[in-house]
Length: 149
Image 1 (tube, one colour):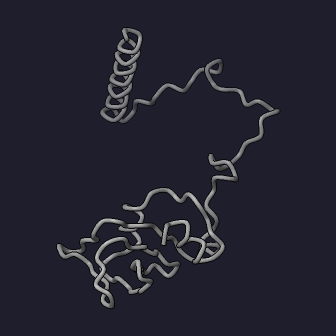
Image 2: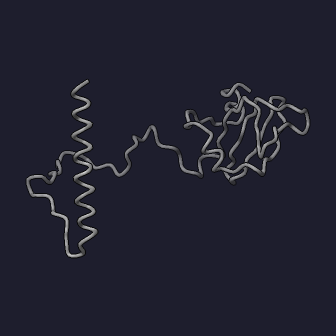
Image 3: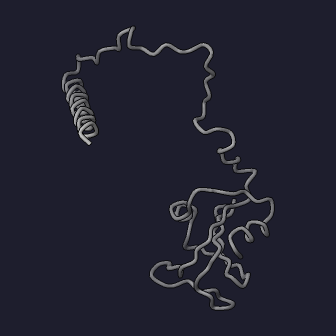
C-alpha cells in the first residue's frame, strides 16, 4: 500500500515539475527545453522489427470496403427524442437489432423481422452506444443468429 502511494506521489511531483518547466518555456520566448543527453536516448535494437500499427493483425478491423455494415442488439425500449420507438408494422418496442449500414444510414429490425430506416439516429450515435466488434459474419443470417434473432 505504501509503495503505491509513494509511486503516485513521485509521479505527481514529476508531473508538476514538467508543467513548471513547460510554463517557463512558454513565458520566455528565448528559452529552449533541454535536449535529452546521448546516454538517455534509447538506442534502437537492429534485431527488432518496427510495426507501424500497434494492433496485431488478428485484431485489426477490415477496411470499409470489406464490411457491409455493423449490427448490435438493443434489448430495452429505444427512446429517441423523448419518445419510445415502436415498429410501424407490428408495434414491437423492444429487442431491436440496429444496423449501421456502409452508406451511413441506420436501420432498425424488430424481433418479427420488419426492417425500417431511422433517420434520427446516425453512425456517431451507433459508435457511442455499441461495444467493440467481436465477430464478423459472412452473411446477414449468421449475424442475426449470433445476436439471437
